Image 1 (cartoon, rainbow, N blue to C red):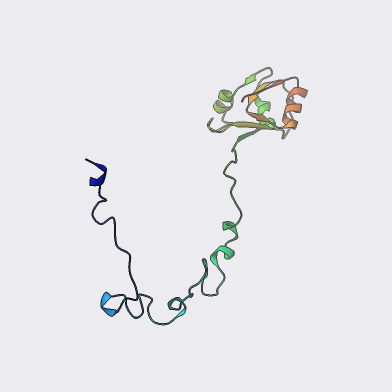
Image 2: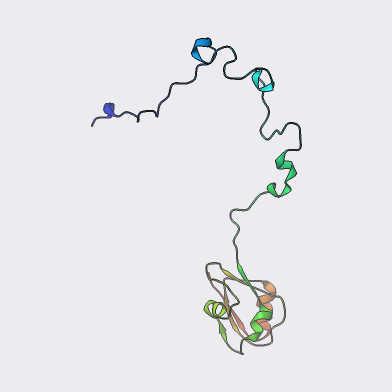
Length: 148
């Protein structure tokens, strides 16, 4: 097969609709625009989102406005008041958090936040730590292991 033998499949190429070329063409006189009205006039028609002069849907639904950050990172959040149930000098790894039910799944990175108090020394593992959480864990005699 040579390049000059290549052809598009039958029906893929259609000739354009030539309007205003006489009534016998099927697109004469009104040229497929119907009779009268804003959309039949030259230069006529309405802008995108126009709804007959009523309040546009895009304005009526505020939840559709704004923007969504596509780079947002979702974390599984664990507060340190939930870590108080572990015995002292326990190594709290991601697997331990999963088994204890503090984290649902490990597909999301784990972030430890500083709500509550901690009175046992723990070695806590996580992807991110808030400043307060880090201070409270180290203040209780524990340590923080940040994963990348």
